[in-house]
Length: 378
Ligand code: PLP
Image (cartoon, rainbow, N blue to C red; front, side, top):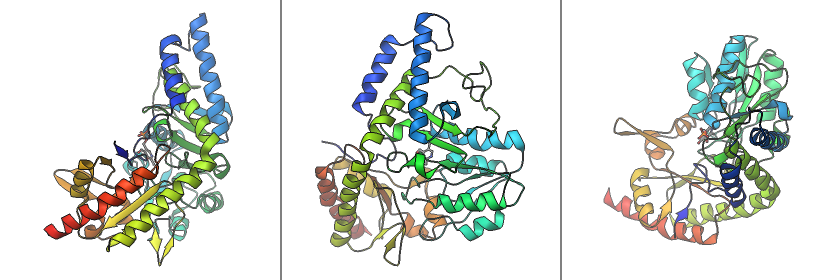
């Protein structure tokens, strides 16, 4: 049995979403821009899916732009805003690369975070000027799960950068937080289906009425000219089904999954010395999504740890990427002030809708043994 603890990377599709996807691919293959019966049926599915996504995100249907995933939604928000109105882009230093890279590519500013992984509001305040056009601060971080103080960010933006639009990458948040409620004062919101039980390669960007963006993809004028290209109708319908199911069980899942996550973190700390949980400062944990246990193991390389865990059928991930043969520590941990050595031993165990006690037991059995083995090698 595989113990899948990488839900923040991609969570398994929900059964309802698989059914909708299969049905749509089998029977609903019409192009939604066409005029005949099958085309009109596809267009109806698109409309219904748009309504479901709009409600889930606290938006109107006309404000929902379907995209090919979170990366495209983030790029459209940042680059589309800059192209529409010029000016400067600002984001936090711990954004996913889908936000950070377009911001830096266009000469924007990345604002530091504190050791708890939350954006430094004082530093943000210093860079917010009337020249700022777009501010992007994620709702929940993909490595640490730390939730950002969006209400405070919104207040600062409105006061000091009155021409700016506020974007949030809610890709990791949607399965765990009430995005519609939290983002009421946010102008643009990105989500991605494969983080909440829909297929990979489908997502959405909310663009509030009156907030203009220039398209990144030009062509047939779909999505009200904001994103050309025939929509992935089956994927979008499956995303809407997954979103509806996620919302129906979200409150209960947050309670269930956070209890599993907390047991995992607590018992690992009891069984092993030298385990540091990110986002915890002076014993106080910053607010986090329910599903992420992000830990650094002193004296261990995460690559080697992942290798040993996979042998025990445990799938997890490290918050580091391998570039030109050398493991690069995560920019998120670096921004939070983690030393290179400690960051090199980071492990993200992310839980989700299929996680059960057995998975936690397997991890609690495997990690202490693997970490001791690796520490003995040094
Ligand atoms: N933003 C965040 C916070 C993410 O975690 C991810 C994916 O890991 C993305 C954006 C990119 O989404 P996608 O994989 O759908 O392009």
